[in-house]
Length: 122
Image 1: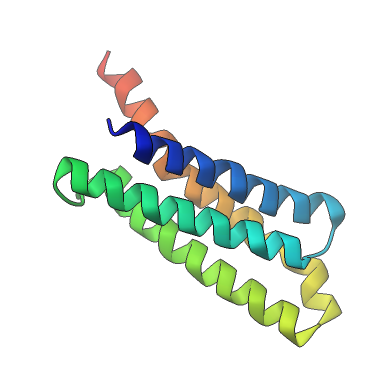
Image 2 (image 1 turned 180 degrees about the horizontal axis):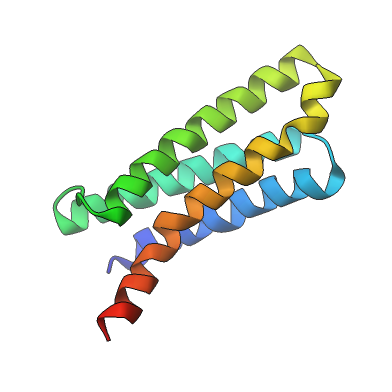
């Protein structure tokens, strides 16, 4: 396991969680949430790239496939957040958290899957 990659991936969890749950608790999308979404995507992408370099590529298992899906969803999520904020559509600003929580839950699958695989292997 690459410790620097793990640090980036865990930083992604912290940033993305702050962005998503901060938005959910406040009840509306704000610019600072968008910043944390982008930080989460950046940390996750950097950590994933380091891990892929460390293990020699992408694995075609639950972790690898869900990881690609999660990063794509995170990118779409950040872009959509930017669009919603720029449009200043109050209805979308107040409802955006529904999509955010969905993306966060999907992102947890590749984050937690190595732990569950290790537990199952014992």
